[in-house]
Image: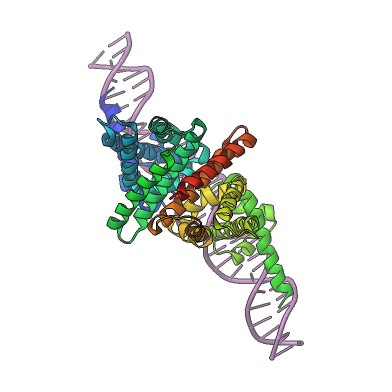
Amino acid sequence: MNKKIDRGQATREHLVAVATGLFTEHGYDGTSIEAVLRAAEVSRGALYHHFPGKDALFAAVLDTVYDRVEADGAKAVEGMTDPAEALRAACLTWIRSAADPVVRQVMLIDAPAVLGWQRWREGDEARTLGKLKVALRLAGRLAPVRVDYFAHVLLAGLNEIAMLVARADDRASAAVEAEAAAGDLLDRLLRA
Amino acid sequence: MNKKIDRGQATREHLVAVATGLFTEHGYDGTSIEAVLRAAEVSRGALYHHFPGKDALFAAVLDTVYDRVEADGAKAVEGMTDPAEALRAACLTWIRSAADPVVRQVMLIDAPAVLGWQRWREGDEARTLGKLKVALRLAGRLAPVRVDYFAHVLLAGLNEIAMLVARADDRASAAVEAEAAAGDLLDRLLRA
DNA sequence: AGTATGAACAGACCGACAGTCGGTTTGTCA
DNA sequence: TGACAAACCGACTGTCGGTCTGTTCATACT
């Protein structure tokens, strides 16, 4: 039971990879299962053997995107000891991540609508927000009641800033301004 | 040419009203044109006479939602002379508006995915963000480069806070905390 | 070796849905 | 009153997501 399982894994991953590209380029609604099938050269039966439906395929794609973003974040803060410094580094990394078209379309635009807000928020809480809340608690002298709210505000704010960079005519200079703005935001949120 | 035009207007508005309810309850994807037709007791031809497609119907719904939100905001600040005070009042009103299921589902969850981020942002810029930027410029002593970024951050942050209230078990007490958090956020963003 | 098992895959098929199209009705105005 | 056009009607179409009945084949068992 190894060659078979490996083969299954391979098609699964292949499907996720192909779907990631199509979802990013055309959005969830703009991507038909047919299109995925054609691009991946996989049969209908194979796809529905691995995924119960289109939204499950999307969820799998979203999962790999989360993985990548988390890995980038972890790499950015490794070795850091000062919580505030690590938080700042993680925030800047997140802004850069969110400039990636894949992250933008899949994580920020489609995910809430496809999964529904509730499921989306639960996933985000588990994979992103939770850590951010811990980091905020460690880094600042925020009142405990504020931590949750400000974690959401910070994350949403960073997303917005990242979107602004992505849309800017001159992305290079926008990125510089944006990172300054993000740093400034962080300062203000953490101030006593 | 009056009875006819009036009748057209009436069906149009009726469709928008019915669609608003269905979009709010089941989301954009969960609402079929068929369902709208049945609920509104209007024929297919009539609907497609007034709207080129499902997304156009959604756009019309979104428009009326914007209208209501704007009207609420305008009422909240009327008579105020201090820009900072008006800004604060508008923000709190916006939080309360965003707690409305219609606003939440239509404006915050579906709109970006249905219209596409670009079109959505352009609309939002014209109807909400633009005013907010002006208000921020008047109310604070923010560096001009910061105004744009912080306007986005503030709006997104307020949305998040509103969502937290909407999802809370005890909405009443959550609302109190949330408005305090929003006020705190505003203070921090406007501080020199 | 022979056979049973079940994962992986194949592709015809189905129902639902968004959108189209050739009509019909009905105010309006010259 | 007759031409005109807006409003409306509903059968029809193409596409799409999802189902269902197989078939293949690597492994486990005897």
